Length: 596
Image (cartoon, rainbow, N blue to C red; front, side, top):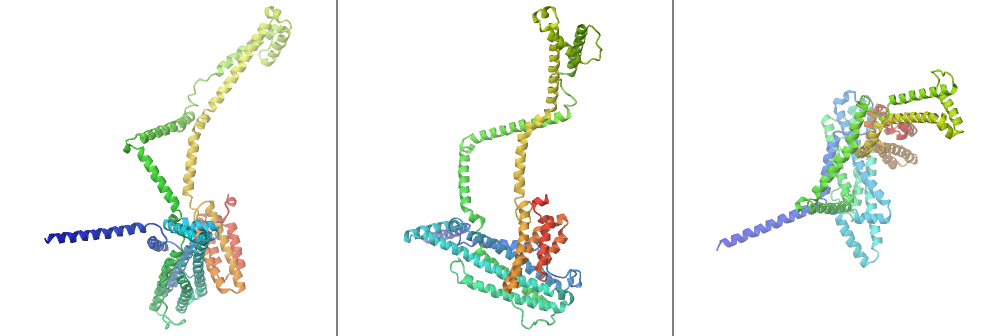
């Protein structure tokens, strides 16, 4: 009697365990679908992005710092100043990467904002994933039945959804651009001092960078508060950005020990990691939908079509007892072999034979030169005998056939006055036979020339037979070439990549002019933001032209021009002269037409 409860408990445990694992597997499967409420793919994306960024740092060099040219050859390389250089380069690199990530997402939302209301509603319903499609369709039908103006509300919601992300990303871009400009200007200001007196200038620079981090925290904290007050986002920002600050005992201008410098550098790296993590989370919540999410309808239709095709193939396969696929494969193979033999193998063999054997082993033609020579000699003797008999005198042996033929034609015209009589008793029949011999010679000569023409064009006919295979190979080669050169980024090759590099140069020039306008108007913050965007564009141009300029030997001059464009102290007029020279001189920035 005690066994039954034990079996009952075991069965209950098994049911509970089965239910637990069923729920767990179902949740994992649902988590793989792109949806607005699921953050599973977002976390994986963040982890992948952080890993890729860690690997990218080891091989990517950002826009060079505005340091004196002889600083790298000085004794500072083996001191703590070298670590400060590395910190500054890391700060610029992280800011450039974050700005690029923000810019890509911001461009997407700006393109959606420029679209029509219908395009915005289409995005809200059909380009945010299957769950958003179901939810949007249900809400649309519900509001249409209840209120009757659901389309207008959906349009307003789409505009608000897009503009909200544009505002957040624009504010973040503005804050990072100002921070980048301030860092770059401070490095430019401390450059000579770091080279001449590192013991006194390093603490000042580190304290200044600490203050810039504090300013960035305040600007992004305002963005954090604005995001917290927004109820449309799926998740709230519960943890604000708080940077580590230097102890107040370390005052600017005081002498620091090596340990204090290392502590300050480590604090900067901690702040940089916090900034990366915070920006990654912030951008991930406002990022553009992934490609699979944007095109989920196309992928779904493709999957359905592939399933239908698979079922159709299965029906005609040998697995279902049908021999259709085997027969089609044999027919396709036979057609391919026949096409290859007729348009590839045989024409190539014919061309080979024509090139290597035809001129050595020429087969007998329709007409040979010896036969024409016999006919010509026979006609000459006939003309000579007829002319001597008609004239009654000896004709020279070297007389031309044309002269003697004139004598024959004159006699022929005279004999035609009495054709019947002269046909029987005169020279009319003989003149006719001479003309027949002349016609035979002309025909044989024409046949010999035609035979020579045909023999000379045998290779052309063989090439003509191979043209279908040649054009097919050319089309395949063009498709492969287009696939290999489909990289349209500014770093790539081809006309589109060259155009992207020129557009980057135009962007640099426009932002330099806009920066000068803000400076003239006294708008300090806007000028700093624009200068940071100038540095961002120069960094992109730096990496876009590096490989191409090194290949053409222009890299040293072009690199120095790019560095000059980023120097805060140079006049705007000189920078515009530099951009004009870059557009006209360097091969990697020339238009495709001028380059040819």
